[in-house]
Amino acid sequence: MLSVSLTQKASLFQDNGAYYGDWPPTQTSNRPWAAEEGLLVAKQTLAAAGVPIAYMQLDDWWYYGRFQLGSVRCVQRWEGDRDTINAATHKPALFPGGLPAFQRALGIGLMLYTPFWCEDYDNPGKFNMTTAPKHAPLAGTKIVAPEDSRRFFDAIMEQGTQLTNGHLTAYEIDFLGKIVILSRFACCPSR
Image (cartoon, rainbow, N blue to C red):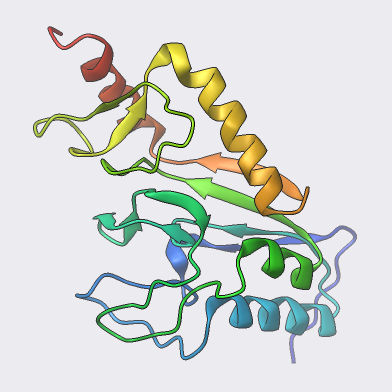
């Protein structure tokens, strides 16, 4: 039996989708249920063991997008994946009830994540974005032009706040080293 003594609350992370997400067709996941069900069980199990959870992080698997870099999805639509069925494993959708319904059932804040944006990103704000050339890091993905960065990330924070019913605990953007290199291609092709 696990014995845990905490003076603070813990956070629950699922890096790279872990058990809950879907995997590229070359890999398999044993997930027999919607991710939202398993995540709720994980939080309830920890609470029953006396481990209080302050917030849950959702990594590079919870949104709509294609596998771009190993098992990392680029962002096509930044919202909870409600209807994608893993073609290789026929696993259920990740969040059939949507991310707001999942957050309500969870009852704690969420830390949301993005890596990089798909070439066919649903760009609701019509932000100025540049597609990485074939020879660049993360080829075929998009980055926001520097002049639109503030407006873009303000919109992302607003969208995250809506997706979490006002309980966006934190936001993580990954692969910044590659994105910075890519931004050099975007801003200054002659370099």
